[in-house]
Each structure stands twice: as structure tokens, then as C-alpha cells.
Amino acid sequence: MPPTTSLFRSKPETIKPILDDIEEQFDLDEEALTSITTQFLADFNHGLSEYGEAMGDDVGPTFVQGVPNGTETGTFLALDLGGTNLRVCQVELRGDKTFTLRQQKYKVSEALKTGEAVTLFDYMADSVDAFLTSSPSGVASLPPSLDEEEKDPLPLGLTFSFPVEQTALDQGYLLTWTKGFSAKNAIGRDIVKLLQDAFDKKHLHVKCVALVNDTVGTLLSRAYTAGGCILGAIFGTGTNGAYVEKVQNIPKLKNSATVLRGDDMIVNTEWGGFNNSRTVLPTTPFDNKLDRESINPRKQAYEKFISGMYLGEITRNILVALVDAAPHPILFKGKASDALNQHYGLDSEIMSHIEEAWNSEAHGPTAEVVTVKLPVSDETEHPHAEKLTEKILLDFTKPLTAATIEPHTLHRLQRIRSVIVARLGYAPEDVSLRDAAVVRWACSIVARRAALLSGCAVAVVARQMGFVKGLGKDAVSEGEGPIAVGVDGSLIQFYPQFEATMREALRLLVGETIEKRIDIGLAKDGSGVGAALCALQAVKQQQGS
Ligand code: BGC
Image (cartoon, rainbow, N blue to C red; front, side, top):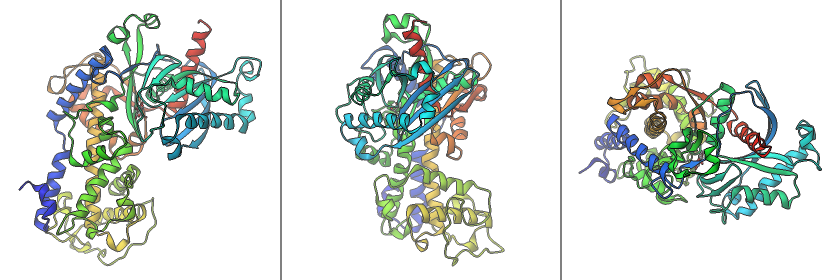
């Protein structure tokens, strides 16, 4: 009987093999990573050549030609839609690699995400209106020539972080929604026009001059602050990357006049849609359940393995299966809290807190994020406590109590227990030390797989741009000097070990020399600054310079 089947015949002695089997399904060795990356590279190049190929509809030219160097100046409005919040910003580029930014966030409700698109765009226009009227002093600092009714309208750059077929800097048609958005009557429509119509309806003296993906914004903003950048990548609610490509390597652009103006163009890879057929992605039943119940089944496959929107749900699927194991429940005495029962009830932020609680060196049972009092029954430290390895923590044939565990491990588990109680709504008496160990294990296998797979995407770009020849054992570094990568997103910023694990995959895929050259830097406020830089480019193009 294969071990996972034992979920339905669980006994203490079969639990460890069940967990080992699940872990094996999430494991990615060098061979698996190399074959995923090889396939990714092939699909990606098809995507650059023709529309309609694997990844082909989504891999997109951006009409952003050229990367800033930090000397750019000007003040622009930026509007950023792509996740939980809508942000309106006013960005002043100071020409010395620095900028100032004033911003206001507005919540995007579920009703807006899933209602009529026109309502969503009206809300966006209302937010810009509120921003402009709420702070007259801010608006006054926009260049005077742009500030007066009779003069040119205020130029605005829109960061719109969904797959778009871009046909000009200020024109792009929505291909599909992602990240839980499904607003009606938007697919196939020009996003800039939808926004401009909403501005015009409200008589706002604002003109949307540029449309930009958040990855492009991240690339441009890191280039502005660091003096150069070749890849902008997001590892947050969603995932995606944009990089600088030679125009001659984008056959699907054919001989478009815009293109012939420059040598390079930023390409939005939309790598979240890689391998939607799931031929190489290491799919488990927990992933299938997530996909089946998502609002975009069979789409954004790669994103569903990697990004913050989904990691919590994959983990929840594992935990629920363990709660349901019978006749011997593996978790929480067979009980589920409301949060655990709820679709998307476990946020990846909770996983991050659980892993932080495990990694933190601080002593004492309470993690920083919570202040819950726990029962003390099995927590008294034993002077002869045995040093247990992580594996033994999951061995259900051995007792796991304060008496059988060394103090450092005990404190880590107690901190995790506090997070589970505070964030998953369990009663303290329903969370044993063993439960804490199992929850942490589930979080770590899901997040580790995500970080390793993220490394594949970065390796594809390094290979595509010629920094490395070959992959895996055949990888040979080309050239020298740092390879600047701008990143943004909650996982890369806050998830413990995410970048370190991504680098582990990179060492396997492109070799240590290249991995060391890859200089990953946070592009703070990348979406806002990137949109401002694009708006600047658009204004310059309009002025013919
Ligand atoms: C979208 C991309 C975006 C990424 C990160 C994905 O769901 O398709 O356009 O760049 O999320 O926000």
C-alpha cells in the first residue's frame, strides 16, 4: 500500500512514513530543477517568437526601450493596481538616483475585484480624485506648467499587474485576470482607455500616458536607484519577471516601426503562466485541489506553486488532510478551527510567522507577533532532556513532551504554538507540541519548493541573457561583474530563508560563480517609481525627444 493511502488507515507507526511520502512529493532535486528550467527556457523562446505558442500569448514586449541611469527628473502621478491595495502616488525623480514619493492606499474590496470592470475603473478614478483634492500642497508641487487647467493634463503612469498584450506604451489589452480578480467585461479591452474614460467621465484633468507591469516598474526603479538593472522580479501575492532583451530576439514583433527605433526592449515574461499543462511542474493532490477550486483553473500554474496568494492554501490543504486522517487523526486531535476550514483561511503571512518562530534565537515561549498565554501542563523543562532532531519531532511512536525534548527546541515549538493559537483560532489545549512541529514542517516544505522553483525562473533569464552557457552540470559562466536584479514582494522581503533557498537552486542550475554575481536588491516603491519613469518616457516621446 503506498504510504499516502494510509491517511485513511493511520496509526502512530504509519504516520512518519505518510509525512515522509508527502515531503518526497514536494522535494525537488537537481535533476528535477534542471528539467523544469530546460522546459521553461524552450517554452519561453516559443513565447518570444509567436503569439499562440506555449506562454506565447502572455510573454510580452512592453514598448519600454531603454533603462534609466538615475539622472532622470520630473514629477508624475502613478496609479498602481495589482493586489490587495490600490495606490495613488506622486513621485518626484530628482535626477541623482533619489526620489521622493507621497502615496495614499485605497482598499480594493472583493466586490470591486469581481464586479463590473467599469465600477473598478470608476473607483480608480475616484481614488485619484481623492488623492489630488486631499492634499493641495502635494499637487502644487507638480511642475506649474502641468498644474493649470488650461495647460496640459497631469501625466499619469498606470502600473497594472496582470497579463496584458501591450501594443504601445499607452495601450494594452487585458489577456486574463489573476490573483483573485475577475471583474467582468475587461478581458480583451484596452486598459488605458478604460481608465481614461473613467477620468474623463469625472472631468479629471489627468491623462494616462503609460501602462506598465509591476515587474517592469521594479526593473526601471532599481535601474534608476542603482544605475543599472537587467531583471525586475516580483515574489509576492503573484509572481512574474521582466528583463532586457535584444529586439532581434523577439521575432513576434516582426518589423514594427516602434521597435526599429532601439536595440533593446524590456520583455514582460508573465512567467506565472509557465507550464499550465503541468507536464514538468511537480504537482501534488494538494496543488490539484487548489487549482480545481480556484477562479482560474488550469491557468497561472507556476504562480500557483510559488506566490503568496497560494502558498497558504496549499499548506491548508495538507493540514486539513492530516486533520481528517483516520482512525488516528494526525493533527489537532481531528479538530479544525473556522480559519482552517475556510477556503484561503491560512495566509502565507501566517506561514512566515511560524517559520520565524522556529528560526528565531530568542528564548521563551512567546513569539513577537502574539501574546497568548499557554497552558503549562507539558512544558516544564527536564534537566535530562534529550536532543531531538527535526525528524524525530515527527515520529509519532515516540512521546513529544517537555521532558523528552531539549529546551531550545521546546521554546521554538512553544512559540509556534502561540502563533497557531493567535492566528488560526485554535484553543490552546487543542494544540500540542507535536501539532506545532507538524504545522511548521508543512509550511517549510511548501515554502522551500516555492523558493527553489523561483530560482528556476531567475536561472532562465540568466541563461537567456547569455550570462551563462548550459545548465546544471554543464553550466559555464560568461563575462564578469555584478548582475543587478531588482525585486519586490512579501515573500522575497519577509519570508525566512526565501532568498537563501532560491540561491541554493541557482547554484545548482547556473553554478556558484553566476549565483554570486547575481546582486538581488529590493526595489522599494518600484511600482510607483517605475510608472513615473515610464510616464517620463511617454512625455518625451510625445515631445519628440
Ligand atoms: C500577474 C503579473 C504580475 C504578477 C506580480 C501576476 O499574477 O499576471 O502581471 O506582474 O502577478 O504582481
